[in-house]
Length: 467
Image (cartoon, rainbow, N blue to C red; front, side, top):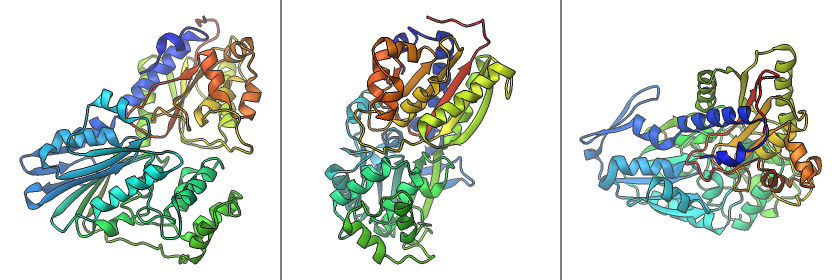
């Protein structure tokens, strides 16, 4: 998964190797394909789902047809497992994957034969996202009272599949997304705005699926593992248009979004009751993989490697570069005082930080790359600390880089190639520097998507290996 030869050719090699081992084990623990096959079983005609508060059983002989719908960066893995399980029982299906990822996913997981696949844009939607939305709606509207529909969702679904409300164009949606993803807003804030401009988000797809039976399977990409935010097509909307308006004002975007967007949000009923309250009697939402599993697996692996693990948080948030500095200050404290944990140790955090672009960037980068670079600025060249920040889906921001692995030698190596890390962070041009110094972590699509993970390995002074 990782290019270990490059990443371990320099710096604090001992800590780097341990950080990669921990992250690899964490990613393996949140494999969607395995989760489907462990929690969904077929015995004759009985399809059983385990792993939730109650077991659910469907007699497939009672259904005329089985449809599969899905989108998101972990959905292809889910679809592969569903096809393995149900095979020719699937009547038709459609899923959308992120642009540029279909070929590597097929190479890693194999092709789908019963479920159609299209590529669409993320994080800013375009016409391919709209085409995917039309395909989802078309298939949903075919479902009848004796049909079972499996909805496969994961992070990325909101941009990869769009169906704008009347009066809002694809271009309008793209502008809104572009502004929001650069504003530093939390993902739930972004989703709140987008769902009030959509015909399918916030449970609105259920209006198209009624009266079919619906089983929604999701891979969580939201810090609190809230079912509502992770099953956006099939969970009732608890937000209002007024909430969306308030978010746009909070991030100083109200005057910058297109006029049709403002008009739509202003004329939408904005009382306490959500605009859409779908009938949930024939709907079951189930979380296959939780974000917390990522952190728990990292902690277990750290202990197996002989490190004292400390889970700092599963709710990581804030400006990426500053979060990196805050996290590495804890690592420095462990070296200085042995508190809050003795060395050797591994500090683990999961969640999602953000980069607020106050000016047009001059290059490319992502939240995890900026976090790891911000962290290494406060390390001396011989500090026995390695910082790995990784987006679990393999693409950090709009780049093909998954994240970064840095240490106190990173600024020295950057200077040797004529790069100024502080300037790179200021203009958000960090990917180029990370590639030049060999600290860019490139995995390709991982097939999963469960928030970001930060692993900081700290070894005792005087017992370290540098290259």
